[in-house]
Length: 222
Picture 1 (tube, rainbow, N blue to C red):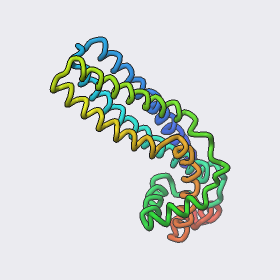
Picture 2: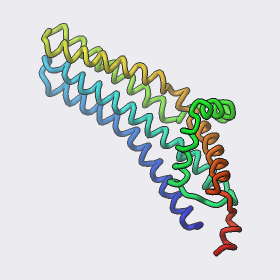
Picture 3: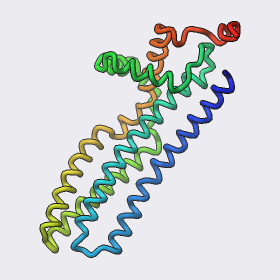
Picture 4: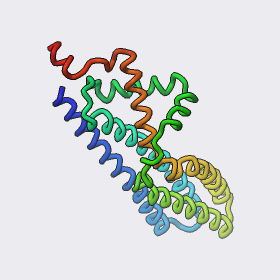
């Protein structure tokens, strides 16, 4: 069992590193695409480029938030289950994640209130430290795509440019709502929120008999 826990620890740590690479690398690819497009496309197609870039920026922002949420779940699980040195039985990441989903879906409103009340706000870090610059980069890219698309709609005006600019404005509005919902102050508390959630999930697992034995009990049964 110890070997399996060690393997899971290594696997989850590698997943965290991979998520961090994605978070950093993907915005840079969008920047490279934008620069390449500006140097190769004629000005009458620039609004179309803005639409493509705005779509990619919005998609990548959602992807980044999703990766950070997943990373926070993993970090909190590792802290409480793999690094804490608990004597309780080990259920594994996938089995524990199943109970994680079940606990949250029992009463979402009550779960949210309980987590907010129990969270140790003093332990919340300044941010997931790499998130603020990534957040600001997405903001800057969306602003550039929006301003650029609107600018080329005026000179030279065309139906295609107007349609693309309207699309960019719609995407920018959607991005504005998403960026406000997932601003750095919200993301910074994800790990502490997940620590509370996992503590409740583990208790739920004990009540369900999925986490009742101790390591010593398991050894005695072998």
